[in-house]
Each structure stands twice: as structure tokens, then as C-alpha cells.
Length: 198
Length: 305
Image 1 (spheres, rainbow over the protein chains, first blue to last red):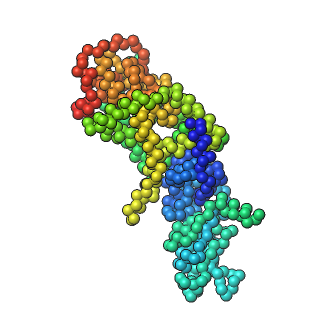
Image 2 (tube, chains in turn yellow, orange):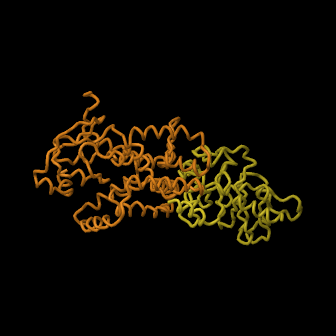
Image 3 (spheres, rainbow over the protein chains, first blue to last red):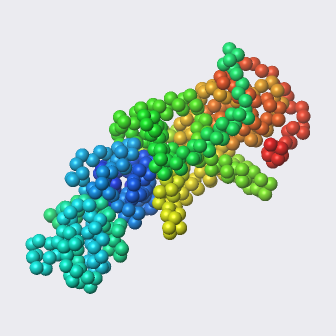
């Protein structure tokens, strides 16, 4: 039994996930989570789900935000019900919601059809931007400001997401009809930033 | 003294027990809807009343090398309840034994006699762990959790697997697309199912949660089945017992007994009493006389009951 307890985390794959708000560091998440599923029942949009059977055995049963089911609404409305429901404080109290980041969303421009649904659902203004061909310094922040000609499906101009401002709630990725938005967890974002600065 | 040794009506107690067991399953499903904070059998929070799985609490404290102060009160609450109740959680509240009971009912039919024969043969060759072996395994597991910082039992615990499966199905199934959400890790329930086959006492012999409760209830004497002088040693109680307690006369081994009271229910002589507090008496037991009583099988009892 002693060996089995040791073998499982050592043999598991190294993978980072999009966690609910208030999550502790991803490397220590599985140690403190009791895998009760209280956060799953508490989430109003049913965005939180528990990891299923996979090669990353040590994280089985821990909560993640699955954009196929929903996105985190905490930045638009008052929520954080998952944090309140968690018994072991692995989702600990969020001190400042503005400084909390779950991850990063990236729009794949080749697949984007300019439907503008991401504009509608992003809870923070100024994260999703549309390039302004006339005034390049001032991209469009609101969907209704964009003239119809340049936001047609075959237009070369596509919306893009500002890396520093995106908090990774996943609402854009959930509502995107062609599913062309990728979510990168915050732990992987820091890795990419480290590599870029080196 | 007479009041303490009061005998409880077995039929009424069985109805209460089965209702409590059904209610326990129902409360997990209700908890999945978010009506009450019942996160399976891992965590219960209703107002100021909070409970946490004791094994889970111990695992987390060892894995994180800290003790979460918010969880001390729920842990102490459940510990006190278990100390008083003994292993009755196994037959009054556990969802795993609920499913196991359904499987046992299915396999006690005439058509499954071959399966029972094979099972009895296999069980003779498999080394059967006793409470001492389980104790050593538990200590090894706990040391492993402390060193490697990974709470393994929480991942494979069948209580957790059933709770998570119910929570997932309730929350992520959609009516519009006729999609029932199922978790693949329900396949890990093969472990308790195989244990039912390999071990004499089934999964309850090796269950870590049950074994912890068994250790705490070794000297439990409240609401126990006690054999009286009317016993003729027909051993039907031993056949019916889901955890296969061997020696029965007097008081059974309370670290194994799950207080399901099937022994008292099926005794043809009504010789087993459920007493509020057991008092050790020197009873003169009868010897085996009636051969017909010996040959009574569970199937015939099921037909008459």
C-alpha cells in the first residue's frame, strides 16, 4: 500500500488545468482537495466539473472549469458560490476579484466567423477588441460601434483578446459557435511568459 | 437495570434502518441538485451542523502537512457519532453497501447457485485479511500519504466514486439533447465488486472507512444483537449475515458487526434480541437436536418471509 500511494503521483502525467476561482497553486491542488464535488453542485452555470478517469491519476476527481458546460460568471455578477461551498479551502477566499486570473483565452483567427458573440459575453470591457483600420491606436471595444462592412464573415479583420486583461473565465469560449477559442490555464501562461522573458 | 437492558422490536427497527438507508441515498441525490449541501458522503453542511469524512480529513491533514482549523469541529462531531454508533454506518448509511445489497439479492436466487459454489471454492484459496492485517495496511497507507503527499484512498474510495457519479449525472445531464452524463471512473467500482467475490466478508473486510469505524467500535455495546437461551445452534444467522461473522453466541465481534439485524430478523427461534445496552450473562446454550432446522437454506427463508 505504501508503494502504491507513492507510485501513482510519480507516474501521473504533468498537466495543468483551468481551475475554478480562488484555487491554490495547481501543483499542490490535488493534495488538498477532498474530491467531494460540493463546488459542482454549487455552480449556477454548471461550469465546474470533476476530472474523469485519465492518465493524470492524481488529479482524478478534482474540479475544473469545462467550457463545454459553461463559463465562470463571477466577474459579471456576484457569485463565487464554489468558493463558499468548498470545505477544505482548496478554493480559498478571493481577496480581490480584479487581480484574480483563471487563465487566458486565445481566438483562433483562421476559424473565426465574426459572429461577435464573444463581444457580447465578455464580462470586462476592453478585453475583446476589434481592430480599427482607420485609427489603429484605438481599436473598437463595443460591438455596436463596428461598421457592418468590416465585420462580415469573410472580412480579413477578426476580434482579438488582450493578454494582460483577460481573466480566463471561459464565457467567450463556451458561447463561441465554431468553438475556435482556446483556454490556457494560468499555470501554463506563467510558463510561457517565463520562456518568453528568457 | 431492567430499563437499560430493554429489548427493541426487531421488525420496527428494520423498517427504521431501511428507511434511513434509503434516505441516505436520497440525500446524496438531493445534495447533487444543490438543495442542501450534502456532497456525497464526503461533506455535509446544514446550517451550523457540519460533518466531514474522517478518513478524508486524516488523509488531507497528512498530505498537506497542515490541519485545517475549519474542519476540526466537523471531524470531532463525526468521530463522536461513530464512537457511539459503531459500524452501523455500514448498513444504515453507506451507498456502497446499498448497491452491494442489491447485488447480493440478485445473486441469492436459484440460478446463481453455480456462482455461489465457485465463490466458496475461490475464497478458500485467497488469503483472508483479518483486522490486524487491515490495521497494518492502514498504517502503511497513512505513512505513504505523509511521505508522498497524495491522498490515494480518496480517489479510489467507492463512496467517493458513487457520490461523484451521482453529482455529475444530476448536474450535467441535459433533457434537450437526451444526454445522460456518466463518469468513466465508475469503472473503478470493479474493486469492491471483485472484493465481494474474493473475500468472505466482501468489501467490508478491506474497506478503509469501515475498518477505521470497526477499530473505534471494538468495545461498542449499545444496540447490539445478543443471543439468548432459545438458540438451538442452527447457524442460520451466520448464513444470513452479510459480513459473515463466525462465532455468534453471546455477543458478536462488534468491530465487524454492521448492525443490519438480519440475524435477529431471520432467526426461526426468535432467539436473538436487540438490546439497548449489552450485559454479559452466563447463558446455558442448547446443543444441536433438530436436523431439519439445520438444513433450512436462505432461499426457503426468503420464500416464507
